[in-house]
Amino acid sequence: MRTLSNIKKDIEFNQGHASLIEALKNIAVAQFKIHEQKLKLFEKIILTAEDFFKLINIDNVNCPFLSPQKGLLGVVVVTSDSGLLGGLNLKVINQALLELEKTPGKLIVIGACGKNYLRETKFSFVSFDGINDEQRYLQAMQLRDYCLAKVAEGVFGSLKVVYPHPISFTVQRVETLTFLPFVPPQKSNVPAGDLILESSLADIVQYLISVWIGQKFYDIFGLSRLSEFAARFVHLEESSQKLKDIEKNLKLQYFRVRHEFIDRSMRELFSARLLYT
Image (cartoon, rainbow, N blue to C red; front, top):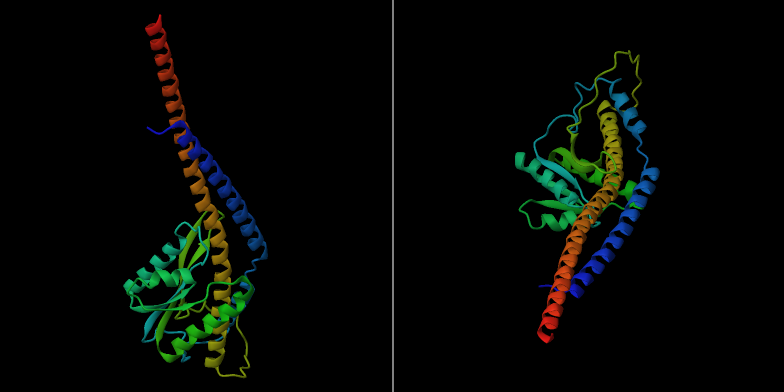
């Protein structure tokens, strides 16, 4: 049977651990709010690029970004290099692997954690550095250029992105977006009039798709970072609840052992009095 001193030490250790988790929770909340205020999604750029497609006729445009090509499926996997995410990285990677089980392809993994996990699998991948807030735009453009170059070379026939999307502060959902082949929006009913095209239509289409994909990557990187802070808070909250349950059980053990000790001491005392009376 455990002694009172051992149980008391466990209770004190558990309370100290709980205090540390509360401090980490407050840090996660502060990071989430700071990042949420700084995060800007430039949806206007994406919408403007999509509006151009409503004005032009691309039915006869020969562009590898518009129609499925012969080649592998490229799957971009956005993971985080931070800890205490409650398995969020694993969910993202598993979703990406499901995509490759449907269609043969290659993974483009963002982050060292995803890279370390995929080393133990049979799937081929290429890795990029984890998301850096200060270098986020540059990283998004580098990833865009790499993916589009592989499509132009015929290595990739299509492109998808798997990333964590923050639905709310406590809910994150792994989403899969199809980037290529690009599906242009429906044409507007408003007549465009006579358009003066200084470049070829194919070059214009490729440029617009390039802008669209680059901005999408930039926004996804920001949303993934936001999901990271939210997932860390959720994981810490779950750990906090488990510690409360452990502390509750430890206190029950403490009082049970203490009562048993008091009962045993009283029985020994009365036995001694009867013996010497």
